Length: 118
Length: 111
Image (cartoon, rainbow over all chains, first blue to last red; front, side):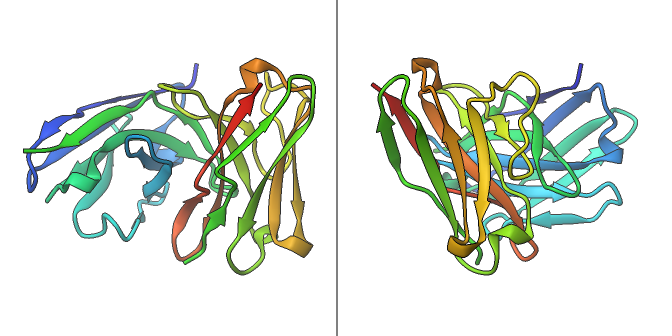
């Protein structure tokens, strides 16, 4: 079964850091485009970042320079390192596989909540 | 920046047909594929339409997608509405400058 399971969310103070993990099963992370999408409370979906199978990485302007997407091929796991966190980064963070031609996000993980507050 | 615009909300009665639009801000929406996701409260999004008009297995054929190049828009049509269709729906595409792009979401009420 193809599945994604996120972890690592929690409460962090403004200016702090957090690393999210996304463990994949049923497919190989390194052979696919993998993405992070977030959803602030009561708001819509916002694309955050992608890592291509070749290793190239891209970010939304809102997180560029603060967030880093990476993967560990041996663990078949995707990561999102989040630094200099702001209140507006508070959201549920989902990882998802992005199909390379259509950018169809499927499957999605269940999400992990990040709260940035003092 | 490329944006996708959806109506904030739509409502319709059970058994009827509803169409949700998704309009591209620039360029041609037909240049890249459009997906549609359903999201119920407290749950992750799930796909109802991918690559403009394809249904994943398990999604009933009451759901259909289309592209209208003349209006630079995509549409999700749900026929034979059921109360279980009540959810938020998001369109999504890709832009070479901005990566993944989502519409703002449409709340469907079936009453």
